[in-house]
Length: 560
Image (cartoon, rainbow, N blue to C red; front, side, top):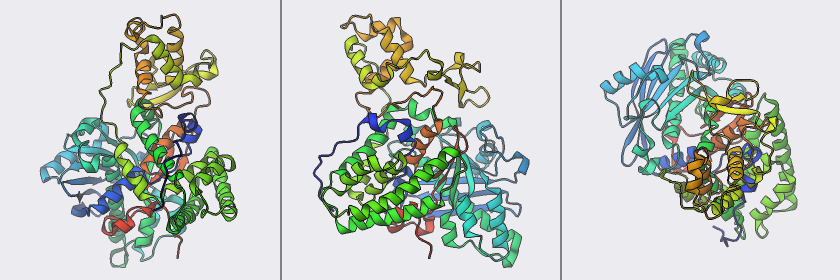
């Protein structure tokens, strides 16, 4: 591998932490799905299907077990006969085509019986600390019916239809970390295979994808009998699991500044390492060009009906053409190739294209990048405010973390047009119009910039050497702001540098930032508040998971 002189610094938080840029992130080597598939392949995990009790109506249960070096995990899946009129992606739905739990170990018949009484109810049921996640999914009815009909008649489904939809089922939630009685994060955080963020959730979705493939094959056999054929492995690999994600996910990155900082800082550290490489070897350039070619295929398949994403896709496709022309004029064989490419992209490409370059140049450098995944978790939540900190030091921290927000007129309606609150019906975050809806009394502390400006203003008349504890005794409403300011010393990428309650805020930017770290592709916003994505499209199924197939699967190969 090429030598690197660690000289290029990480990009500044002021550049990275703008919502428009966060909303342009793409998956990369540090995405949680790829971390999981690399680990499972490298450690030689084995997979079994101890039960598949699904009847001719497509109703029943199945169990899929994944066994690593030290322990097993099992997806317990329940298939349901859902009337069309009850099928809904909304969080208020009460019935689904399939429901799931990830069991810690291999379940007994008693465990399955207990789960059968609770998992299909989702929020209305309760699981135990033996379960790590709870999930549900609905069919993409048009593609599901098409695939079943084609396979039942002895034919393969239309590849273009598979491309246009991308998944046979989409999840509407994958709950973990203690929700509804499931195991808390602390129970599994010290396990090597669960050390990186969201590994239980990613394993859940990986096994759901296998169940969905098996279920559609089963239903085709029920329908077609001896004439039915299995789904072609190549077409099966193109199918992922869809996901519909709404506002419930957006506050996560505001509420977890240290965790989000760790994700961003690790990505920026990986980028800095690669930018510092003085010369690229021929095989490294070949990997980059291969991933670029396969990205062009992926982007060509990426569609959206939302005006914002249509515009971003147009920019991205133009960026790819511009990049190809640039590489002819500025080949990568010269000095500091990746630094030159990044610097060029910052003026030549859109933010969507710039962030794609970030992902692509990490691809040849597993040895530099992949080990950083061990630094992405945050399992130390015991941070206490330093009450002895002098007021002048607290002011300085507020300027560093929120200086951009201190001159905003927070009394102007357009700057505080919205308010985050929690719905009574589903206990899920919502974003309301402050001046049109009676939501202000229920506002959640999800406007850190506004709150920081108010805290800074309230500190104005306090003597510099006063302990901040005295100020907080008089102004306890600023405790969360001072805590964030003090956390900023160890989490400089933990604060979004945009107004999260302004009239122009796009929550989908927050959704995409988080989902990109999951490893999602083909973002398809359905409004400014919810988005559809695809997960594991192109990934090897358990029987094909090996070190050589475990990583580059996210980049589609050219059709033969």
